[in-house]
Image (cartoon, rainbow, N blue to C red; front, top):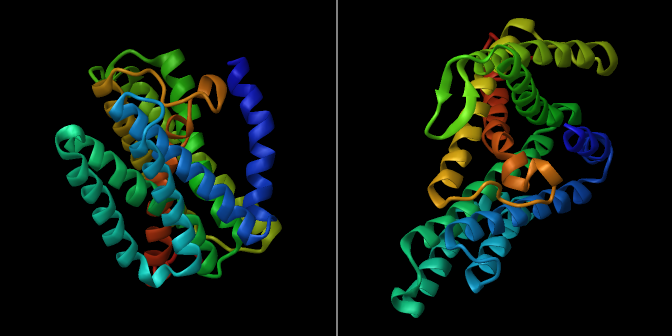
Length: 273
């Protein structure tokens, strides 16, 4: 708990500054770092080694995906094709030394992780208030925090014991409820201080959906850790683990928020008034 509080006290102000007030290029660099470390952590987990050509390639391609979306988003398909050629070409050159799961870890890191983190760049480019860029973090961290305390105090029934033995159904429900509360608080703050009028019902619905998505993201990366027999992906955030331990839910929630805002803005039952 002390570690969680320390990371929050140091990390939250930096996160808020980068998202709300830092120049766009600073945010892009921060996202590149997170994506690169995430891609590296995933390859290290799958390959079982800390340093290798594949680990370096996985980190670089993850960074490249975020930077590519910053400079030339319309050519993303070309980048993904090149990354596929890169990893399969490397595997062919190495013969049977490279396993298929290592190739897939590299491609998932380079394409999916980079694409998910670049959601923040696409949200900013859409012209909405930058306060919205905080929402994926809020709807990920709130779900995790409320689920943790609800499970700690009320947890009785295991949610997915073979994947994450400590998670409970009661904790999951607490996380969903907490997400709705925090989503509505976000709407109130945006309306009160940033003059962004937000409909409460769509926001509550989005918060609930993102709560489910956040838990799927958490369990998905836990499933990978369980398969390869590791406790944490890294130690960048002390007891929180690495990037993929701390931002596993964000990687699922950020694209969900991006898609939801695009959808709600195109229908009469809008998120924004």
